[in-house]
Image 1 (cartoon, one colour):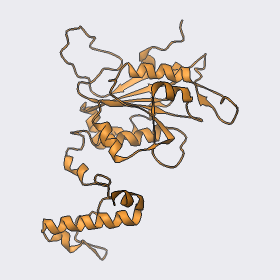
Image 2: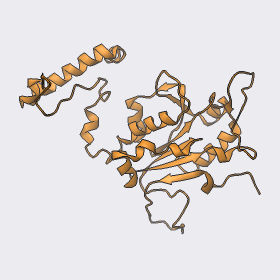
Image 3: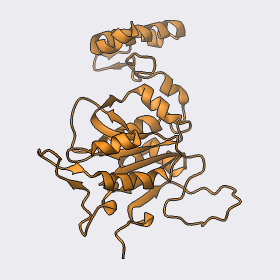
Image 4: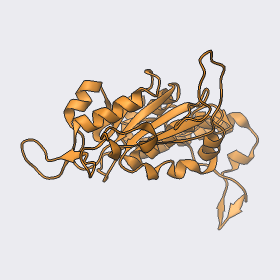
Length: 266
């Protein structure tokens, strides 16, 4: 008996299988069938049960069922050592906490990267990474997919990051217990930009950060609520005036709430 894991023990795939023409015979049933033309999301995690989570709801959930994107939640634990499948050890040089071992993570990464296009980025969710932005989400949406690594404990051995040239990405200046929540957020921001997921492509062009500004206020019926009225310009039918009003509102909100964005725009 070997300690080496087999694919059907640590991976589960979400999405609808499609079949494409191929000269080589293929099994109709595989542990994680690839979906034809689907954007592929891989997540290496100690908690695969956290996925797809909220991504299985609403529009992203429908897109998952329709095969617009695919999810492989790869359990890190079966790659571990010994009877208890240990994946971490104490920090070299001393200190509190535990660090994910490079040999364990390396095996998981090799397994994952063999199952996805080499053009798909390899990202480690880390508070010390570069800030995640709307521009980054837009870029990821143009790729064939992404491999995400969810950290735990004190993080991952630096040698893994150096060896694979992994990009570290942060969701903000705060620390969480693990990378699962950031991974869900990154995927949600990216998936909604994939053609067909939202249905109305124009909605992604008129929202916060799409042009470096925060989005203008939104209103809907009734025209009067609790003594508050919809701004008259929005009911005027004058599309030029409406566009100007929305632009002014976006600029004012950005100057007030995000002076860093306003400075970059200026």
